Figure (cartoon, rainbow, N blue to C red):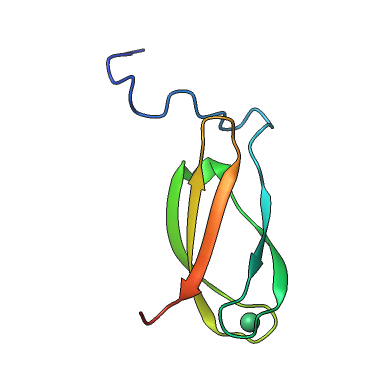
Amino acid sequence: MKHDDENLDDEFPEGDGTAQTEATVICPYCAEEIEIAIDPGSGPQQLYVEDCEVCCQPWRVSVHYDEAGQAEVVVSVLDE
Ligand SMILES: [Zn+2]
């Protein structure tokens, strides 16, 4: 196994059960506090679209995992 790209998040605890798998966010449309599932297996940096389960408006979801497996999740209005 090659090991020459050490900056590439090799500390990321993917799959060992320590990474965060859910997060609480505030919907930018309806202001409801909502718990969403997040997937550490998709990588330390993620950007995708998900619909609010309360008001069904589309969010842009940005997920960033740090080296400890803690996720920072930001949701914003999609059409910005
Ligand atoms: Zn909403």
